[in-house]
Length: 286
Image 1 (cartoon, rainbow, N blue to C red):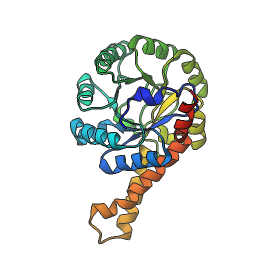
Image 2: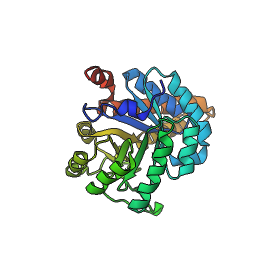
Image 3: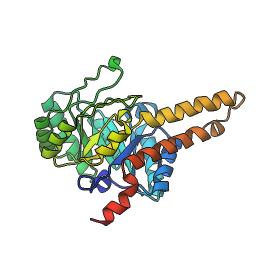
Image 4: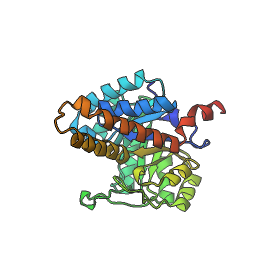
């Protein structure tokens, strides 16, 4: 069933679970993620990042993902990840996305506040929740020119209050596209932020977080945890093995079977680590 971000994050600040947002690029991996969620009876978020929308129009992705969500037996959010301007967010809203992120984290604070306020006004007019970012979760590749800055506690408080966002991405020790689980999570910073910010927090760059830290994260106010590199690595590694083992194969439907199964298994692993498979148990006790 297609739901909004607020619906699945509603209890994450009081219950020990978080909802994984998997960056997907097409039909096969999105079906695998939904299959993982359905097998575990867990909510899930299909996230579209800027690499995906550079390859395929938002309108096409939106129609495909929202239809898959509507047919699913579990709650599925269709989310725009890292929308970097007003027009991109507007396209996502028009295309049926049930959640949007505007990322102004590379801008000066006041510019980020002002543009986020405009995005929130637009999205809330359609009853669609907004995620934004304060501080900046950078990338492992410095050539991308994206600054990496830990979130300032007071800025997080002011930003959340002035913009009215529904979820707030903060930088507490991760980087995007980490291939090894070596992130050093700043738990003291998390405690300070969640003491002053009264909306669910969002963790980006979560592939780099060790499993034991993911299990700790669910005990904080992080309600949404973004995962992309982990399922891409599962797909890519398994696809290489399939091509090597079957040098005469050329049908993508055959070559994709095992890689997609690997994506499903990795998604199930993350869902369990985040306690999302206990979602129905948690919400039934509220």
